[in-house]
Length: 374
Image 1 (cartoon, one colour):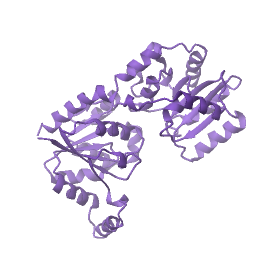
Image 2 (cartoon, one colour):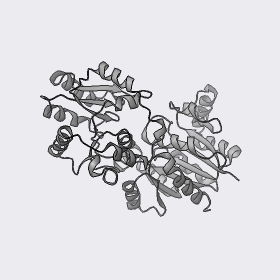
Image 3 (tube, helix red, strand yellow):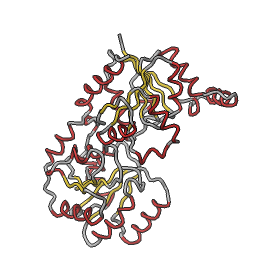
Image 4 (cartoon, one colour):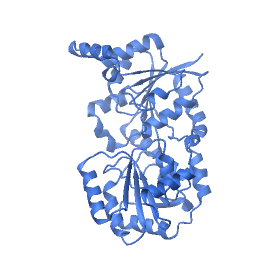
C-alpha cells in the first residue's frame, strides 16, 4: 500500500529549499508513494512536475478567476480559505503525511488539527530568517509539527534550542545529472563579458542582499583594483538602494570589474564555469546548495564559516574564513588568486556525497519511519 504524502510549499521556483524539494519529487519511487503538491503560488518548475503527481495552487494565486472569487467570498464570510482548500484535498487524497517545506507557510498548521495525520516541517531557515513571519506563526510551526527536519547540523541545533521533541537531520542535496556544461558556450560567455585570458574571475551566486554579502564586493574590488580580477554575481537583482549603491560605485570606480547576470536557468552552469574561484560571502547560510554546485564543477572556494562549510570544505578544496573580518577574507582570496592549485577531483567527489541519488535512500527511510510511527 502506497504512503500518501501531501507536500505543501511556496512556489517550486529556483530557490534553495524549492530546488531540494524539486529533486526529491522527481526521484521518489512512484510505486511506493502517492504524491500531491499544494503551492502558495506558481513558480517556473510547477508545470514541469511529473504527470503522476497531483498539484494545485492556493486559491489566492490560482489561475482560475472562479477560485479567486470563491476565496474572496470566504474571506468576507470570515472563513479560512487555506483550511477549506486543504479540507477539499484531504477528502479526495486522504494523505497519511503532511510535508511542509520551510517555515513560511504558517496558515496550514491550524488546519492539521482536524485530521489524524502526521505533520512534518522541513526547516531550511536559521534565526536570521525567522523575521519573515510573526512570532505566533513561528510558535505554531513548532507546536503543530510532529517532526522537524533540519537541512543541516546548525539548523538542527537551533531547532533544538527551541525545545522541539523530535528533530531529524536530512541534508539538502543537488542533482548532479542536471549540471551540464557546454564548453563552447563558456567561451562565448567570456567573450560577451569581456573576460580576458589573464583575468581571474570570482563567481558569487544568490540574491543581491546584505545577508548574501553584496556590501563586501566594493572593498574586494578596491583591494584588487590594480590586478586583473573580476567578479560575476549570478542571481536576481532586487533593485534596492543597496543594489543601486554597489552597482553605481562599481561602475564609477571599477568599470568592467563587477558583472551582474541577473537570475539564470539554462545557462546557469555555463556562467558558473567561467569562474577561477567561487566566493561565499553570506553572513548566514543554513546549508548552501551553490557551494556544492561550485565544488562539483571543480572550482576552488573561499567561504565564510557558515552552513555546511566547516564539514564540507577540506584543505585542498579552498579556504575557510573563520570570522567575518574583511582583512582575513582578502588574505584568503589572495592566497587562492596567487596559488590556485586546488584538487578539482576532491572537490567533485565531496560534492557527490550530497547528490540526490546518495541522499534519497536516507530521505525515504526517514519518511517511512515518520509515516509508520502513528
